[in-house]
Image 1 (cartoon, rainbow, N blue to C red):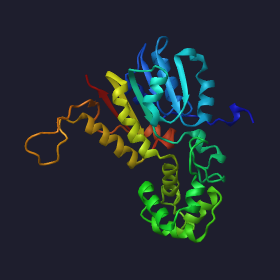
Image 2: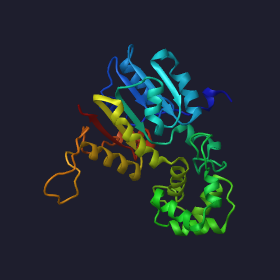
Image 3: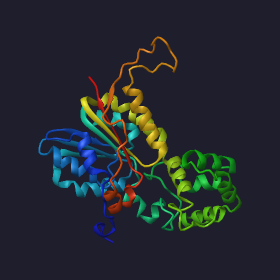
Image 4: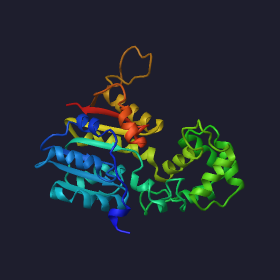
Length: 314
């Protein structure tokens, strides 16, 4: 099957809001830490051409391969790197790409990953339980499901999936191991919790699959580490934009931005400030930015997206 036939249609989330929030303009220098299929990157490049530059990072080598084709017309204005954004400062040092005018994180799983069965991200497509963003990473979802203790599984599903029935799910999985494929796991969770009703907005296995994906890719830990690195890379007035899709990611982004923007981080109730904290960011919008009803209708995957933006201070 040719590449053009196998690559899914990509609709970047909150595109207008991201471009406006980053203040992408001619000659700017930007980093897309989650390149995916290049939707946001191409829109940024259109705004910063002909003299601007963009660094695109993705842990998925297939995403890099697809984006190389889609962004080829921009020539040397684009640098694409197959790496994890947890190594952000090292990557920028390696490619002499700092300081920058804007940094974007779009933390959703890409259409390429969701719609490619063998990646194991979706319970709608039968495939081995993998869920790794890059093939060189460590544990697969299969190894977690089949080797973790029942207690460890329950803790993981509750922590990363915010699943209130995590113990019941973990017990049912442990009693029916080994589990080989995505559909097997989805059916086990469904049997443990009961089939979805017509009123249900999400499949019973949604939170379990999300928890596994987060654990396999160390997503939350990597996000915390990467956000801290953005401060040293943004030039004064540069913008940081983060699109998250569930409460754990959004909480990390919100707490990071608010801490960096605070004049004082002393414990609540402290009479005299002794922290010596100096704010490095300014919040651009204190309220989270969400997709319009029109965008959600045309792109249902954007439904849970939340965008936060902050600006680097002098």
